Amino acid sequence: MLLPPNELEMLRALTTSEEVRERIRGFPGRYVNDWSRWLRASRDCDFQAAPIAESAATEFKRIMSSWQACGRFQPLRCATELQRTLDFATEPLRRMGSADLRCFQAPGELLTDAISDLWRIFEERLCLKRKASEVGVSKAILLVTKGRIGPAFDSYVQSHILTLVIDCTTYIKALREIASELADLEARELTTLDGPAGLAAQTGRPAAVGRAVDMVLGPRERRRGPAGG
Image (cartoon, rainbow, N blue to C red; front, side):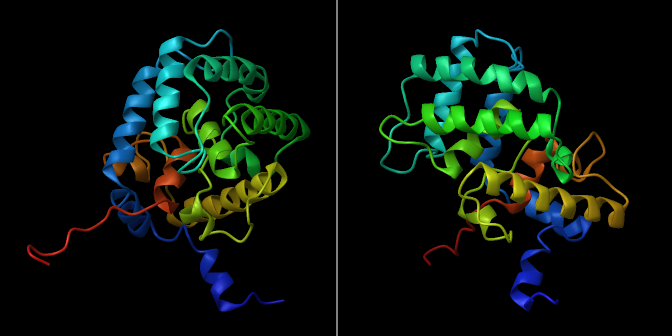
């Protein structure tokens, strides 16, 4: 059965190498700067063994707050509580090992169980007054995996995919969808999205594969209008 044209278009978020590079270049610079700060702050932490350093937890809170991970009016927990949240997250992250977005093209039971446990921890222990949404949880996973598993499923990203992410089951399904499209892109263009010579690095914005997809599908830099306009 053929998909309607609008759905076919949604499946083509990863197209040619040049279009992917242009989308990465158009990703807002302030988020690129946030990411660089995060990688510096977490340089000595793989998030797979507790305790997590206070400095990493503090930067985690700053970035998650800047990204409005719990929504515009919903506060995150304090840095001390988030440090404990990150400590809890080390166990499923250890089970996930070095898994990245590509592993979700056909995730095994061990990976599925680990990401489900990680999802539950962040869902219950990020926000102060209610459970975290799919946006907040997926942003936290993007951070603690240092970009291996992404993107973060905000409204920009969700507009490119067929699966509406509302919980861990649909999150895994959407990752599978994106991983499959990524494999098609890399086979068709004879290149990679990440890596020292990959498309992200070619733009001067090198990143692990999930973060690179996040830049491709995420928000665009706002263009300034003409003077006086």
